[in-house]
Length: 506
Picture 1 (cartoon, helix red, strand yellow):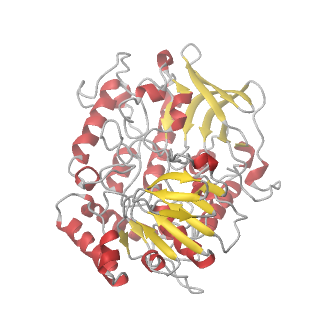
Picture 2 (cartoon, helix red, strand yellow):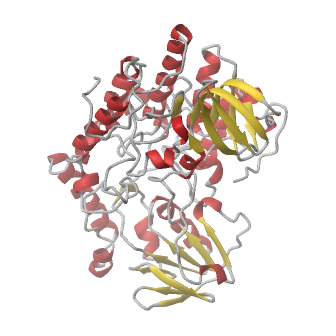
Picture 3 (tube, helix red, strand yellow):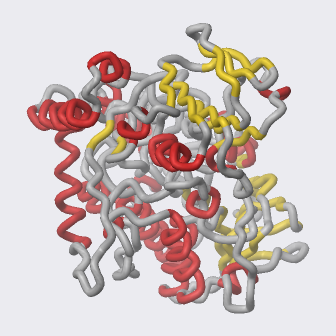
């Protein structure tokens, strides 16, 4: 995960690694939108005793890593900047990925984060020390001690690679969409595995430069009209607050059986009918689950790309690679020079969790054995002074992720202020985490994410619980959890509590 921008003294790339036995007040892991946003707010609050650890050599997170052709925001650009530092000059309704990366880099510079960045520094372990009431971190550039640890690694940072027989022997180029080969020449035969968000963006671009493209589709996505365009010079951008309120109303369509859900399905079906006149192809592209059960996608050129004569839709997954031949479940065989894995990310079982050992040595992976749980989508019982941004039930299936991230940042800042006044570590009670988990499960039960008839990366594969998304409106989340409430931290019982125990602390 390397950025291509050359570092200068004023660039985010000039951060250095921590020295031995360094002690800080707050250690933030990850320099994507969540980590940079928190760093900016810490600086604005007058807190300077923090570092932001980033394993890559640049800030930007997913927008640094994903450089495939066509990469862009899939929500309106106006919603994809911090409310405290809006971007008034997006070039398009849906900003290209390079612009978003540039925005994050600009924020890191303008908000004075360069001295706090520790680029090229990977977290290799973190252990809570009860006696010192601090986190002891090990990193690729030495040890670090922090009173407070904040993870901001996101859910789209670890590519998921399929276990495909023969994949390791493929003689051509093979890479995940998030590890794009920038030197890929034109005129090649390209195989694309997957039809999710990345594939919908990159396949039309590949079709413009490849000799042939075969797309192996395990499950068709629902695709809605995009309506992207460039802004005219001097054109006013949409009002962020008004657009956020409008986006929040889309949650109604994520409740199973509602009129709003039926209307959204009709809109998606109309888009498919308008763009795919062939009934046989249209049948292959029609999902058998509710719109929004999987991530709803937006594109005006996905369906047209699939109908080009040199593009083939294979309605089934690959089962093997034999030399340069891609073998599909149907038995069809395709000779390809390049294999692109648009196969998503490790989401419900975040790899970083095994690195964190809380009270009694229990790892976060062990605590989340039955799926991710938390209180307020931010704090976890048994892990004092740990805050998880963009983690359990912190995503939105209808809105910008920044809506929840900003509320979480406010929550963290409130917790730090509370500690300044009271002293001692903060650990949410087992009862509070259990009550919040119970609430999430009850509210998720009526949504398309659990009732829509699909398997998605929003739902934990083992427990069947919705563990990635907040099953409500963004405005409600911000109102409830954008301000720190110390009450759920009052009973820090050490006993392990099941999701059924304890009374609600609300």
